[in-house]
Amino acid sequence: MGYQKPAWLEALYTQKFFVGCSYHENAKKNEKNVYCLDCCTSICPHCLPSHRFHRLLQVRRYVYHDVVRLEDLQKLIDCSNVQAYTINSAKVVFIKKRPQSRQFKGSGNYCTSCDRSLQEPFIHCSLGCKVDFVLKHYKDLSPYLRTCNSLQLSPDFIIPQEMGEDEMTNETPRSTVVDCDEPMSSLSSGSSGSEINMNMSSMPACTDIVRKKRSAWNVCARLMATKVNDEDMVTNMSRRKGIPHRSPLC
Image 1 (spheres, rainbow, N blue to C red):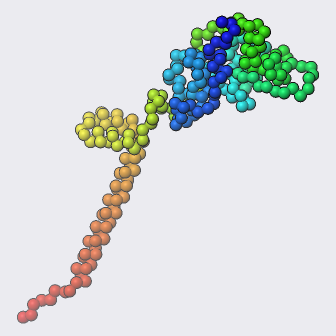
Image 2 (spheres, helix red, strand yellow):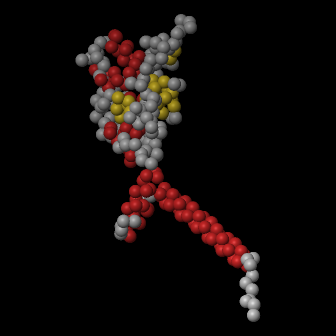
């Protein structure tokens, strides 16, 4: 019905963004800065593989408030008369209203819902203010809604480079040492030469550990050899300094 907001719009206004994702709380850069219109929820970049076929909207921050690109929002709803701001060469629109107490009543443009001072000819300071104004005066939001079957993230959206296969599948990354021990034991069980090359090429971190172990073994070997040589030298010296052997008396 026109009196009600669509589910995606209601959730966009109530969802929390730029908070840690509970599904990837141990991952880096896990702030929820993407909104999925099909699931009506906020997600982080590590959640993208599960929503790759959904309509996605990037949420940004501007003066501590949530904003979206005007170009993206126009595909979903009519944003005319909403004041836009420019950040990083892109026009953005605030999602929620930003109340501001009017210090004096003078001439000029003010937001229809929160009395924020605006530039002409704008009369709404945010998407939420326009939606409230339309529902209050016209009782029907449907003429302002637009059909959008596909909505992808902008090309400048940055996906964390450290997001590996384990994080893509919501699995906890395993220890590097554990990963190294298992392939080394399998190599000693009679693997073919090609398999050994493939395993070793896929384990750069393990190679470093093996090199460190070998260097430690070389140091130990040299110390043991030095110790043996010292013991032989002491034995020979003790033999020289022992009681001389006398010839038997005739």
